[in-house]
Length: 402
Image 1 (cartoon, rainbow, N blue to C red):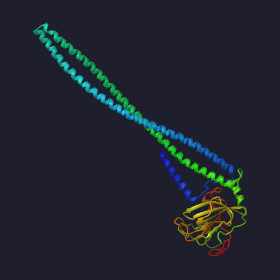
Image 2 (cartoon, rainbow, N blue to C red; image 1 turned 120 degrees about the horizontal axis):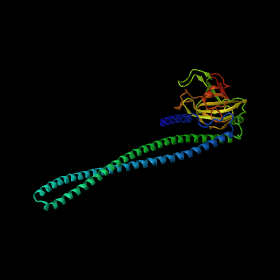
Image 3 (cartoon, one colour; image 1 turned 30 degrees about the vertical axis):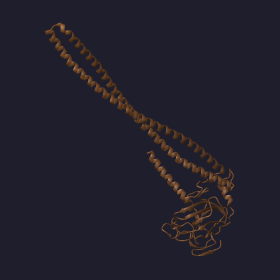
Image 4 (spheres, one colour; image 1 turned 60 degrees about the horizontal axis):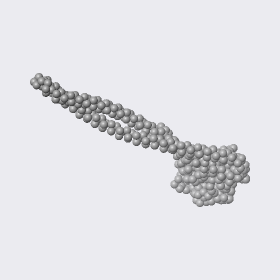
């Protein structure tokens, strides 16, 4: 059951990691609203201590596995030795039984000879008298001595057989006990192996957490945040100089409005999360407001390559997004201004983006900072606070200038 549970957890873990790779390009750790840089550094210390403890536990477990495997191998060698001893005892029993049969045969022959001697004694005593008796008496005594010796030897051999049979049973019992111990050692070693596999899996997770946390610390440090600064405030303070929105391209035509519409593709919903601007593929896409790149999504099945940028306009936080991009010129954490080209437009299906019918730029705006290091990563949060991008003409109308 433990192995089954571990297998299920491994599959779920793999699925989560797989989805993360294709959904968030960088900065997977979320900073809480009141979290400071010092809090992040403390988290990093805690993670490193946890990894150290885990590494020590792994070494101990590896040593235990090695010890129990050695015990199992020793038990297997003892089982083989006991089997050889049993074979030797059985051979001794066979040899002793054969010797017993020979002694019994000799004793039977002596009995017949003794009976014959006694008959001769009676006959000669009757015919010849005492003068011929001496030789017969001596022969009779010799027969008695041999018979007595054989009887004694027979008892010794039978006792030896009994002892060998007892030794045989003892060895068989010892062999069974060794087999049980070996099975127990193997079971413990397997369980420890499962524990070690789980530790190795956790170690990968901890290593990833350490890397992400260190990346966040470096990011906020380079950004100018101090140890006791609240990170969300520090970030907001850096991009609070926008007084309005600019258009992301220098010219274009509105091909789809924000809100309800008839879905243009089977994989596209009826509720449009932004506006679509008709532009040729490869058009320069500028930042619509000064801000920070919060997250990047690559090769999404609906939206293709995406960029999410945090900004503050007239004191209010927003996250704006560009979808269906041919290429991206920025990375997570970059500060961008309205004069920076953050991407080139795409809008054609590249084999992975199924939510497009032709070249265009999707532009969406949501109230609040979402995704990445300083926001909630859930797409549902971004979608819950969407607004209609301001300053654009109606459906089918062109604009020129930003």
